[in-house]
Length: 110
Length: 124
Image (tube, rainbow over all chains, first blue to last red; front, side, top):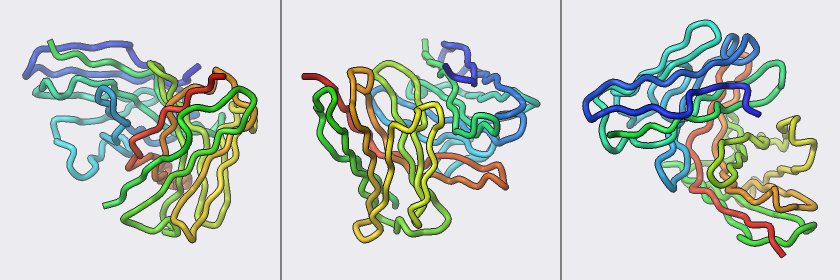
């Protein structure tokens, strides 16, 4: 059972802004940086945001991350059809001594 | 550009040993800035970190997986490997390898890039 909880689904029309939340605890999000991964249908996950709010090379700035206390958020602005995917938050957990992924959020573009 | 590719049998019989290899190209597996990890994802489900290895052979694993996995590294071939013994149907999953940025002191931990993944089915 994942220690990082995400809402199962989110949706929006093209051009809208969608926000995904990730809830954790003091031993993971509260004390470590959060990363976000995008998994397009049938493909491997891809790093989308690292260290809470940093973009890997090639990731558009329509994606933005933030963290506050034991929660984190991923915002997608100017939603596009190609953003339809599963999104996972992740962080190291100091108590469990392991890397933990969130439960995942499926984003649908209406 | 760094590329990782998993290889291994797609079908394994129950009670046998699963062996997978990840071949790294476009960069050296001995780069001391990085670790190398394995992650699994059952069909239609979420991601789970299995464990990682450093170029010097030091390994660390997900404690919740109860020491079922063994990860090793072969720097001469620029490869690292995953073994799982006594597999069951519950081990049917997609296995990914990835470069692991693991800097606990700096609270930095992420996987990038990932291999394309390989589906391993456990069935007789």
